Length: 262
Image (cartoon, rainbow, N blue to C red; front, side, top):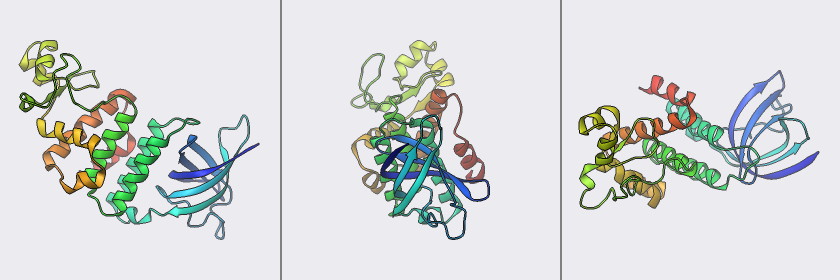
């Protein structure tokens, strides 16, 4: 049996039998870890108050060869996150952020950048950053770190920049692709301008500008000059479509948010 210790972010907690809980962790050095917190449901458990979703903790766990679940030995709370989940919107958003990490981070692989992304996003949300801006920032960065949605600086087909003299044209997310292209290249591939607009998802220059700002600015900086509601909705559409194409399905939490929050 091997022993490990380090900082982690708690992604998910659910009950197991009458006394235990299953906990999913995001660690810097070892990626995702899922383990059993034995006795965590007991009234006077040593885990009492420590297993908060999205909390940052110091954790020690034990791994035994041939077992999928690790055994969680100790958890010490570093930064609580319960204030983020004091209302329904916050609860849903927390689950949404966590599910991205569950889907995009591998087990037993270093995950320093995803860890830093989630940790800094939670810090900003706890400090009062606009939740809508935070969610769009987080979505774009998750896809960027996965290597499937690079910053939209130039068309990957003709290599012309999206910004500059022709920036008012915006871009298009073509069907069955995960990269934005310029309207001219989209039209050429889809049988003219009418076909491109009908089949692809248009992305205006303001949305392009926001996606580029995501790569240059921190979340608090971005939130100080937020885009319009229309831009946020278009960015949400684009990142959701790219995510669906990559995963082959939608995140459950996204569907729940759409249904409950409208």
